[in-house]
Amino acid sequence: MSIKSDNRHLYLQVIDRIKHDIETGVYKEKQKLPSEFELSKQLGVSRATLREALRVLEEENVIIRRHGVGTFVNAKPLFTSGIEQLSSVTDMIKQAGRKPGTIFLSSSIQGPTEEDIRRFQCSAHEEILLVERVRTADGEPVVYCVDKIPCKYLPKGISYEHESLFENLHNQTNHDIAYAVAHIEPLGYHEKVSPTLQCDPETALLVLKQMHFDKNDEPILYSINYFKSDKFSFHVLRKRIHF
View 1 (spheres, helix red, strand yellow):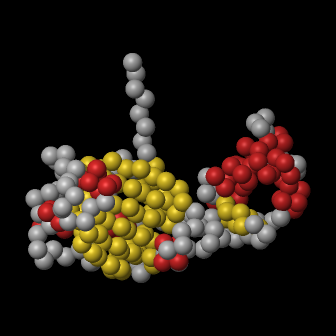
View 2 (view 1 turned 120 degrees about the horizontal axis):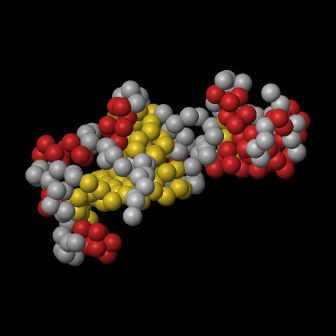
């Protein structure tokens, strides 16, 4: 069927056609698309129309454009989760049928920053445990994790190098995580995190910042997780409220 036999805006038709070609295997993951000149000729649309379609597809992470190199099909995320569901990184990896692992980077006991005092509602004299780890799926690094926990919540001898912190808090303390307040931010190349996760220069990161609370509304755990955007996607269920 010709693109122009459809009554919708041409760029929307182009978007659907390119998505269909990707889904049916005409263009495979990480494959380079034809040049704008060739693709516009194949589809029978102007280059301006094609560019608008490619812009939308890039925003949707369907494709990635590399300056001076070309346009490529993005790999589909391996892990997806509803952001309204509070799952540990370990559980997300397991649910995708992959084996979770941990690369322990560092841990240290620190005094709280001004932000920590505000977040944890603690005094300036309390100690905070800072843990940095890389979470892996079948051995591949996929998430860079920075976690902060007030030491008063942690019994001596607690292990945090190889297990889910959620499980540790559940099994070894009286503070189960009940809910979290989360913020998601897109981030481009990060000079420390991106090489650690073996990201391509063009691969963006999704940064999930979460403050976790127990059933008594006590702030227990603050985490910053850097997800590879080509491996993870998050969605949210929004319900309409009728007044």
